[in-house]
Amino acid sequence: MAVAQFRFYEELNDFIAPGRRKREFEFSCARAATVKNAIEAIGVPHTEVELILVNGVSVDFSYRVRDGDRFSVYPMFEAFDVAPLLRVRERVLRTPRFIADAHL
Image (cartoon, rainbow, N blue to C red):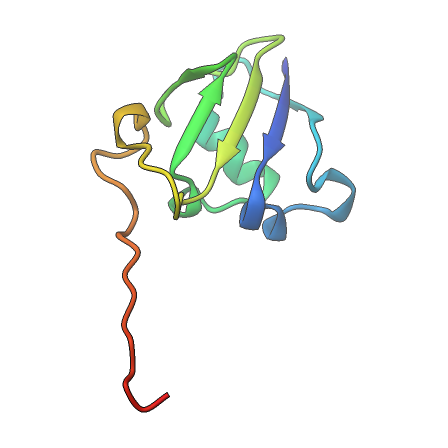
């Protein structure tokens, strides 16, 4: 078993147990598990994840969880351009847009 620390940010907390929300927690998984396997086992759909940092370095879903790793898992960023950091996918999840209605 590999034991790692996970921390999920913003709306990703909606998918996890209340006792694990908005704080770092310990998670055990098989030594061969990828970070994608671990994220989904915790309850977060991988399609909601835009950025994963392990020990401060951006990784993709195929990264194998190691004993003592510290993961920070982020949803789509609205205010910051994180494209240079992305390893999970080739482009950002969506481009935020604003539409003004003249009748309001």
